[in-house]
Image (cartoon, rainbow, N blue to C red; front, side, top):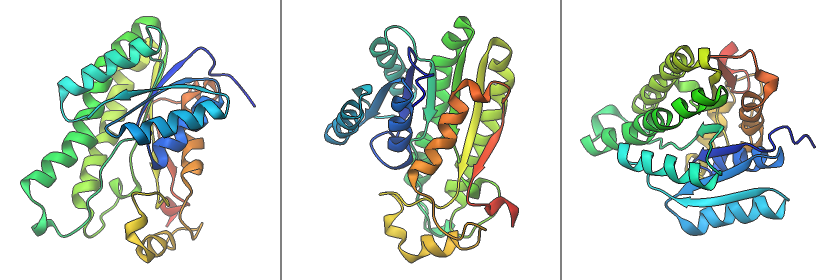
Length: 249
């Protein structure tokens, strides 16, 4: 197993479940020290234990990403746990309420924008300048295939992730010249704890793509790891589809 990320620190939001957890495990397997943030200490500790039992290193950081203050607090704590540096930031935390536009409340809109847009925005603002000062770093944003096309009932979620697509490109232009690579992974339907409630609808959505099935979180994690490593040294501002080919149809 390659340990090309040895000596780096990775902050992975959403690392207590789903794609974020799979990414945390995969980055740790490549040698990164992973900071696992979250509101649920038990789930965070479970991810940390899984990483350590596999031979990796990780720490839990209690965090609730709701505003600029909480984002800056997490960035400071992750930097402390990382020995003074965070080299990789994976913005994987997200909420995805589906349903008719007319049923959405102000609270729904506020919470989606807070977690899916504002939290990554302020984390990048807190961490990217330090990466730039050191001359290296990688930021990977997790978006969604429904940021690219219209889907009934997915407008709020898709719009929040479409904003993250634009931010990915803007940050690449802003920080790339200083050695910080900013890219995104755009997953298709993925079987996680969060999508379990979709039931057969997840399979039906996945059936529209050439792969014909939902992804496993580990498959998306491998795309994230690629963008975090020097294998993607000439990749800036890209959105890598990991959607089972849905982009092709």
